[in-house]
View: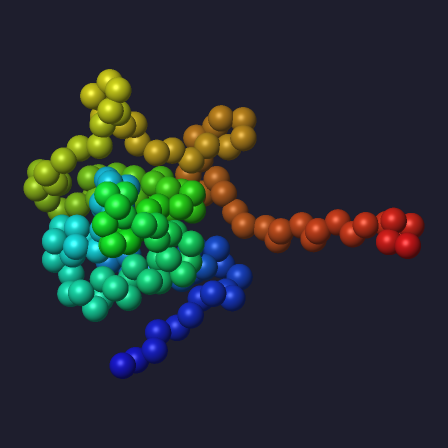
Length: 159
């Protein structure tokens, strides 16, 4: 088995995110958890994954704090996988991936569902990147700059 490269210590936040989120199976597990699935068997039945792959992905998502295990809500001896705040924070990532596919997929008519506002039943607006002052931003409107160094306490306070 080939060991994959770790991005855990990488300075790029995208690479670090991919280290935590893993591969497409992990994102699909998170998608199903956002829709309410909680048990190993539910994930396995919905996604059709091999049990060993599912077990490894669930373990990794728990290790990265995206899912947590909890006793089964029905009082049975099983455990359930629940999204943590970090896991729920992936919602905009999945919406962005969905909207990208809806726009650029070769066969968008084959996409079986649309994302709607539950309260109003209306489609969700496309995600937008905006400046602090509200301007719509494109990639050409952004750049990267070094993060400011943390401020040091004055030496008088360190005594």
